[in-house]
Image 1 (cartoon, helix red, strand yellow):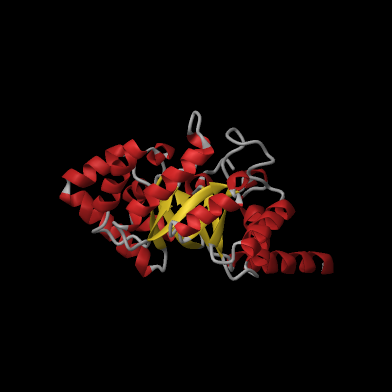
Image 2 (tube, rainbow, N blue to C red):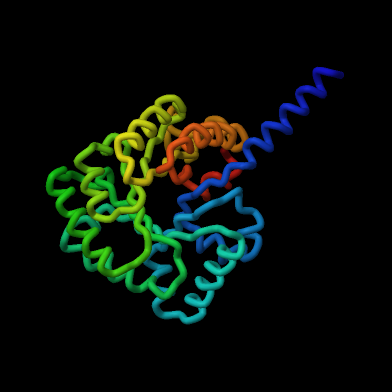
Length: 268
């Protein structure tokens, strides 16, 4: 009886401990899911600080030509604000780095200006490119960021694989007025994650950092890279422990999970 009671208390404490954590989410289908579910979307939302919401070409076309769609997006953003959930515009094509594509990105940023996003997140790091020259890539990023800075007052986040978080790249991002670097570290090795992030934050005090982890399904990523291997509840608890360690750094923002859709999928 006593053992059962102790176990129950441990479960309650663990639940409370995990529930204190507010996560941010990559939400590639966020607006689509909201339109399907309306208010249920927010009612069923896990504990959330921010959502990085992306729009596919069809959605953008509809927003450009349909006043009802634009009104719907404004309602979505207003409902999020009421719930203290920040919505940031996610722009995620690595080809934007090429100078010939800069204006395409700038035009999207200008199109979304009337909508009350809290920031812009760029997921344009080079892992999605067939090939790239690092020096040329850095130069193009600096040029692109200067153009973006002239077109928006929103804070800019920049996703970067942890293997690319080198001093000269981080210095370029900082001098280019990037407000936050989202370090993508797809691993379940908490100690390695914490050591790498602590080192980056200690060596780059003037940059803010977030940590992107994955809960994508096991048919997408190997078990060493995704917290799907643990299931939702245990994953949430592990994220809280990582967050507690990293928040000792004044330049840590939060943990970002790839993705909200995968987290909500039953199969994990």
